[in-house]
Image 1 (tube, one colour):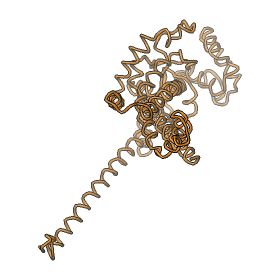
Image 2: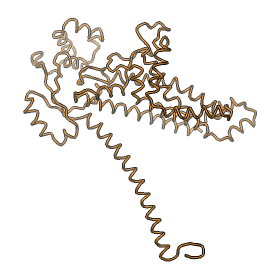
Image 3: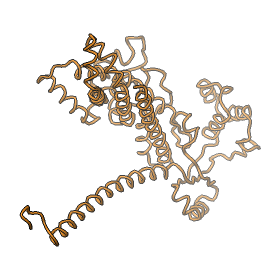
Image 4: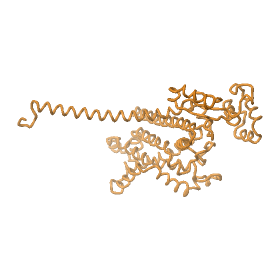
Length: 410
């Protein structure tokens, strides 16, 4: 040691080696955290994709050759209508025709009806993508031994038909259209409710509110509300929107008589309350980022506070506000617990026609399908998860595009 207590010689080298050793350990720890995150995400994606594709073994309860001499997929639209009319009871045919006229149905829709209502597919087994790729011979041997009459085909459960057909009690014919429309209605109502209120509250807290104890209490509670479990918001929605405001949320005030408070409007408002604290906090951060020099310049030329906010603060913070809002809504679209409490349907075949309709949503359907014992429902649940993830990624991509667009204008 010298008089300044700096190590010299071998002591200096040992200390230097120790510092490099600590730096290497720190870097390794950070890299390990990143690898764990990447592995977790990869395992999640693999598990989802693995369930949405694979071999399926099935039998027809009624041999198609006893109904028509031609292969089913080669029948024309009129021939399929004739098959339905001949083999269904008059009441069942009229019910389907009343839901949608047979003449207006597509060939694929008619073929699906024939398979579901007349041929009736009986699924014998479903295998994952991994099993289908690496154990094909074992699967074929198992089918030949247990179900010699069964057909084995590689099936993609995520199809255009899955996106455009309503729900069904049979997984082979179930679609996610009703759930997708329900989720879109929820998101729309939540945005219309939470965006103006959230931005307005943020503007007041940031630009008008005095810096006193009451403001600090309100700000603290808003921050705490952002971390409240979503099930609590579901209970709030049940008490407030479903029961107290039932005349409004059920549509009775507007002449709707076939509904109660468990409507898509009540669920959308509940989701709006759920994301409201997040929108307020994000909007406040965006407004804080606007330089004070802009405000001072506006005040210097005689602008009022409102003119300063409208012409300078909001245009310069709009990119951050919209980004935070869309990311907040991304949380709402994946929530399940509040919707269950508010009263979402687990099985509904009618698309939502308005805010006073009964509803379901993609997370509800995913939860419902994963609780079923039949493996084919697990396959369509995996497909629905992919649809939900695509919707989330679309919202996030929209947020990025909006942010970049508004930033270029500034």
